[in-house]
Amino acid sequence: MGTIEHWIGGSVTAGVSSRRAPVYQPATGQVAHEVVLAGAADVDAAVSAARVAFEGWGQESLSRRTKVLFAFRELVSRNAEKIGKIVSNEHGKVLSDAAGEVQRGLEVIEFACGIPQLLKGSYSDQASAGVDVFGFREPLGVVAGITPFNFPAMVPMWMHPIAIACGNTFVLKPSERDPSVSNFVASLWREAGLPDGVFNVVHGDHDAVDAILKHPGIAAVSFVGSTPIARYIYFEGVKSGKRVQALGGAKNHAVVLPDADPDFVAEHLVASAFGSAGERCMAVSAAVLVGAGDRLVEEVASRAAEVRVGPGDDPASEMGPVITAAARDRIENLISVGERQGARVAADGRNLKIPGYEEGFFTGPTVLDGVTPEMDVYREEIFGPVLSVVRAGDVDEAIALINSNPYGNGTAVFTSSGAAARRFQRGVRVGMIGVNVPIPVPMAYYSFGGWKDSLFGQSHIYGPDGVDFYTRGKVVTQRWPSTGASDASLHFPTAR
Ligand code: NAD
Image (cartoon, rainbow, N blue to C red):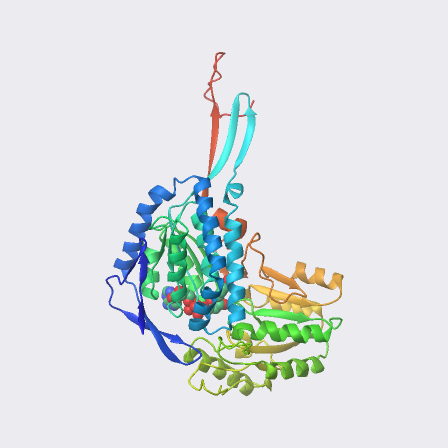
């Protein structure tokens, strides 16, 4: 059993805090490693390294930064399989799913490779007689990222490639549940030619997070995780003068209209509710059926029961375990509460035992029918392989249901009517919408973000919003006086 240590200033270090946490292999339920948990002194060491590195990196040419970005892109691409294996081992997701996560992270790196174009700025010739005006953006300095367990490679890649391309230096505090991949990514940055101290990894829990929030040397914090912590991070970060974007949890509804193709819907509901064991912030956790839909529920339930659940490294597995025993117990308890509150268990994933992996954190796909908005299974973010089926009389009732939910991350509509889809996309107060696309994660050249309790702060993450978030603007008004009459005057300057 190894110890996963911090990566500060280009080298691995145990730091000064003696706190440690176990890191499990969810498929076997065994402790695979332990991880160091930083205190304020360790965070300070990382920020100091990042501050020193910013003096050089913040002044590097776009050309040099881009070369490092392209080299990093090649290394991540070449090591995609290895990254996927590290993720699968500590997170539990199946290898094909981990490969998808690496691919979506890679696309953000590719976007960041275009940084010279993205930072081109603006120029107004002859804004006034003999006066030109131009605007450009500069990096912020040391910025931090705090990330969740469910996408240990991709979510940090929503942040650091863009932050670093913009000229900042970065301190990553990944989830303590699956920390290994961040150190491997750090080694790839170094191999790509990134100077020491530009990318640092500090492992830890709430102590490290609080130290980041309080540290005066950190200019901005990007957070992705659950809503209560996102709210806390946003308000604490802003209070200490930082720029903050904090993406939170979700309850994503997929509305099924009567004109949708039932086979297509059944297949996609199963994939989007149970892929990655439902541990995706864009997973569909509530299907809203407009019209009767009883046959659709039975079809989804029978397909759910056929999902092949097993360890992530078995190519036959379609769905792996959940992250911890506590997560599994909470999920199964919520299903039982739902049953007691009147939901019908159409497919039951509780008490699943996988031969050879009896100690693993497995729970199978569950479908609950007859769910109503008052039930706990509807109100809570379950973050497990549970699909709740809710009924609505028409599309407007479905839209009203979505809009009365505190979350507003993603939503989808299944229909063959363009008019209904348009009414839906204009009516819902949600940040990311799919039309016959159940997991509408925007491409890297758009930005990702929800509304309401799914995001605190103004900026969405990655894409053009990411570039804005990690830079601040300057505008220069300039003239080169030549001979002629001076136009100096005591009145407020206006253009001529
Ligand atoms: P989490 O909120 O428990 O943890 C996220 C980060 O916060 C981790 O780095 C963790 O160490 C830290 N943290 C945990 N408790 C803390 C505390 N009390 N004080 C300070 N920091 C603390 O989330 P998780 O369980 O790792 O991830 C799942 C959650 O993340 C779900 O709610 C999911 O919807 C959400 N998520 C959202 C998005 C999005 O883009 N909106 C993406 C992925 C995951």
